[in-house]
Length: 360
Ligand SMILES: *Cc1c(COP(=O)(O)O)cnc(C)c1O
Image 1: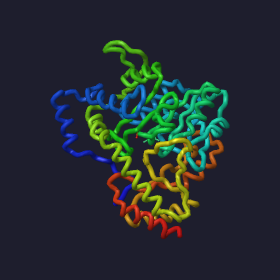
Image 2: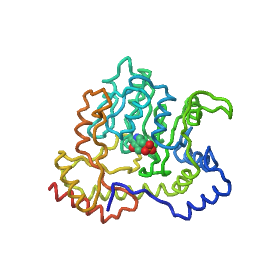
Image 3: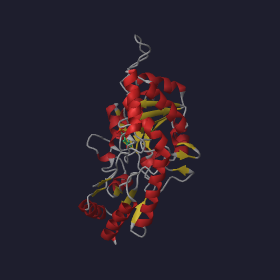
Image 4: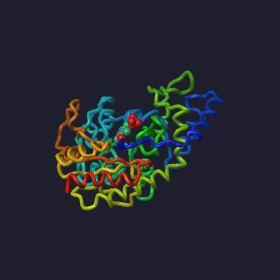
C-alpha cells in the first residue's frame, strides 16, 4: 500500500540515545533540556528571532490568535487544512474568506482587500503546500489598514522567500510538526515572531500564564511539549537537507513522468522562492477526471489524498459564504500524489502511468 505520505523515522539507535538521557535526568516535560536544545537549533536553522516549541500546530494557531488579539472578523483562506478555519471559530472569531489565485492557490492582496470592512481585525492565511503568500503586497495592505497578520506556515518549514525564511514575514507565523509533515516531532508545532512584546505574551500563554511558581502574567493554556517529542526533532534536524533533496528529486521525476497529461501544476509564487517540496499537488480539468484517477490508483493500493477538499467556506459551521469561486472549483479538482523520502522512483512512474491511462 502506498499512502499519500509516510512518516520519516530516524535510526532507532539515535532515538534510544536520547531516551537514555531522559531516563538519567528524570526530566520528562516542562521545558526540559531537549526542548531547549531543539528550540535553539530550530531558531538558528530557520533564521528567526523568537521560536517557541509547542505541542501541536493547532495550539500554535490558537495561541497566535490570542497573542495578536484577533477578535471579530478575521480574513482567512478557504483553501487550507480545516484547522486554519476551525481555530478562528474556536477562538470566537468570525472567518471571512478571501478567494485564492487559481495558479499559486494562495490568497492575494487584491482578494483580501475586497473583503476588508471596518470590522476586520486581522488576517490569518496559509502558505499552502509551502508556497509563499504574496507577503510583500500583504504587508503593504496590512500596514495601510492597521491589520495584524498571522501566517499558517504548517507546510512551509525551510521555505525561503527573497533570501530569508518565509517565517520572518507577518506578525506571527506558526508551524506544525505532526508526523505527516516534512519535519516532525510526532506531534508538535512552532510559533515564530520577531516582535519582543508578542514573544513575551506567547511565552507565558503557552505555560498557563505563569510568571514564576505563584504569580501569573495573564490567562494561558498548556502549549508545552515533552522531552520525548523534542528528541524526535533533534534526531531529524541533521537529516532535513537530505529529506528535502529526495523530495525534490521525486517531484522532478513526477513532473517528467506526467508530462503531456492534461493537468495543471502548482505555480510557485513569483519572486526568489526556495521551495521545500512538501507536497506534490496536481489539478485536474474536471472532478470526474479526478475521481476516475483516484479509483484507478486505489485499485492498485495507491492512496492519494484530496488535499484540500472541501473548500472551507462551505463548512456548515461558518456563516460567511462570500464569493470564493476559485477555491470552491479548485478544491474539487486538486489531488496530492504520494510523496515521501522512502517512495521508490519506480512507484512514481507507476502512479504517473496510471493517471495517464485514465486521461489520455
Ligand atoms: C497540519 C496542519 C495544521 C494543524 O497542525 P497539527 O500539528 O496537526 O495540529 C494547521 N494548518 C495546516 C495548514 C496544516 O496542514
